[in-house]
Amino acid sequence: MATSTGRKKIALIGSGMIGGTLAHLAAKKEMGDIVLFDIAEGMPQGKALDLSQCGPVEGFDAKITGSNDYADIAGADVVIVTAGVPRKPGMSRDDLLGINLKVMKSVGEGIKNNCPDAFVICITNPLDAMVWALREFSGLPHNKVVGMAGVLDSARFATFLAWEFDCSVKDVNAFVLGGHGDTMVPVTSYTTINGIPVNDFAKIKGVSESRIDEIVDRTRKGGGEIVGLLGNGSAYYAPATSAIAMAEAYLGDQKRILPCASYVDGKYGLDGLYVGVPTVIGADGTEDVIEIELSDEEKSNLKVSTDAVEELLEACKGLDSSLA
Ligand code: LMR
Image (cartoon, rainbow, N blue to C red):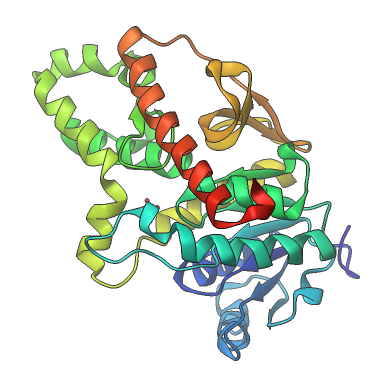
């Protein structure tokens, strides 16, 4: 137990829109005491104070503090990293590589020095490269560092399908593999509507294949759609909800099977890459990667996506010699 109260400790690195939303969700769920960290002075303290004052209204009991000092994340059980810069309309996530790589270096060192036993969930973009770099900079074991992407991408796919079929989103089990870029791979062959394969369900409902293809395409570009609408920032509610589901799976040893950017070494023909795959999350962090059978087309789509991630890793190595 990390706190003097015996409660779990959740450190949130970055106190922007996602950080604040994460803190609110974690507090509402009483997941533990929360440290909101940011280099911007006053910002994490102000948000922590504001959020603390929700407690009496909402009836949650969580100590929420703000800090500019990495020492305050000492002993955290879970660290969720949102630090860095979001993209603006017209930018790709990859355009953030240089600036956010530097941020991951100081975050990684802060984690290494203060909470080397934590389970670390990275949200910063470009996600697959940043989670890899964060792992390298922090030196934590691969099973304790993971990226939040597949849960979010699958939730987007599920939402669009539920709208199309006019059915409850609770009955849609959607599934997205690969990197968290526009080449991600929504996998229709493993997507079901209450157990009915989505393509069969589409036939029953008279929805054409081309309409499903449009939904797949919208899912791939789902982050950019929100960036375009917001005008100055990127999505935060669904990314935060997704990361909280992953944190709960770890803290509760739930053994959930969630699509996450996990370290894959051997499976899917990959050689030491962080990329979105079905992952068992429990008390040991990412406990297993599930390798599913893919069609030739799905395999080749996954290859395009993982090649794009590999290219980014090479770019990271070129930008920071300690990664080479
Ligand atoms: C998302 O998918 O919402 C995030 O990766 C943010 C972004 O830039 O799209």
